[in-house]
Length: 135
Image 1: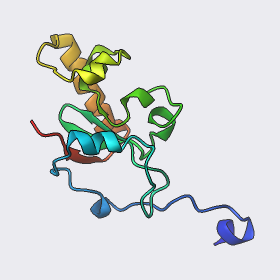
Image 2: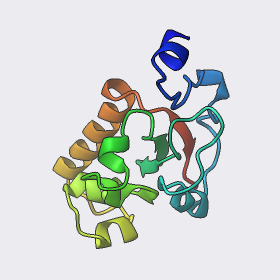
Image 3: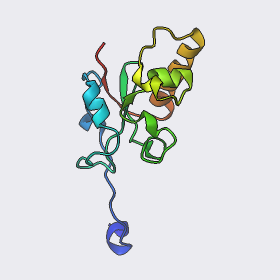
């Protein structure tokens, strides 16, 4: 109350409890992934529009702490709303690597890089996994 009423700070959002997030087992279509690129409407209780990023079949909502990286003007914005598995594994900003999402030809080193990215999303950045891509 002190910040909102006495100092006049605007409320930008509220903490979203884990049980209010979509289930990690939910299947997310390519169309839904692409729609959630940070440019849509801001859901009730969120501080910003969702930014989904898929990697290794998992879909993360990187808007939880990653807006400066994945939002408009961010250095990784090109991955917003995309399956970035191939691009992350190859450490590539080539747009073709977000169009071609096939990872079957990755080298062992590239597979390790991709695993490291996913581990970072899950353990360091704590981006919620909000679904899976269909096989």
